[in-house]
Image 1 (cartoon, rainbow, N blue to C red):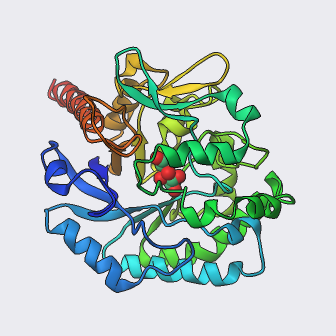
Image 2 (image 1 turned 135 degrees about the vertical axis):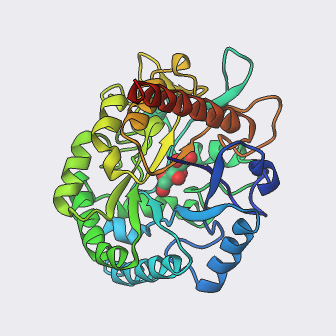
Length: 360
Ligand code: DNO
């Protein structure tokens, strides 16, 4: 496995590459051109600039999260052809700079969704929280306000202003898109771009829906093991891959993440590992990575990954906000660094155990 860290760019993050460099065993930066409008081609010069900056700190830059998919593609509008062609061009341009994995999602309108960005935990820190009952009665506009007012004036991925300004139009455009239609539009997209990804040697790694069920009556399709079966049936190329995210898919008690990781990690060039505590009513809060702090058993998951010599990239996912850190919600330095050290420790211990067993 190779450990990586998500970083939002020099002008967009509260954390510097100098700081990330001090986290042990972290060799790759997960990056994106966060200022690009969804649907635009990522030009070679822009890619080159970002990649060479990341590399100048001795990091690899071979994972991009995310190249977002234009809503026209998800809705199935007639202008989707243009956006699909742009997407293919972006894949080609990224491959020219050594990118191996593109993480993306296919969630209508909203990307990951929480109702409170700084919810207090018992240990005195704060973390991202999803109040299930609240979302049932919430107007999407109120949700947008919650997210925007707590973003520390930084654009949150998936919550770009140009999209939020058109929210009512977008909801109307989705009126005829049910789950089945969304699957059809997904199949159309995948079948169009995978040949390009194959030619460029890029794995297209879809991120699960977060949370993994429908919200605001919008369909969601990447929600559990059945979704993976269905997407591999649509296109069984090894380049049609997944980003396994334990915290996103694991936010539903229907998903046993230890079993899902066991079964599907071979399709996942990229893993997001984090823990989450789910309450009886379906609400959930993100906790430390420590297995006993939540419902995801990262110890068992790391044991399995170590036993099967997982070769892909891992990143700690969101973290709590600790020690008064002023950061992007979920994307501070301290808790993600702690998360990395926990995952590193588990990996090393399981590798040693295996080595000792093999040596008799
Ligand atoms: C949230 C992230 C998601 C993820 C996208 C992938 O923090 O895990 O925004 O990057 O869904 O496209």
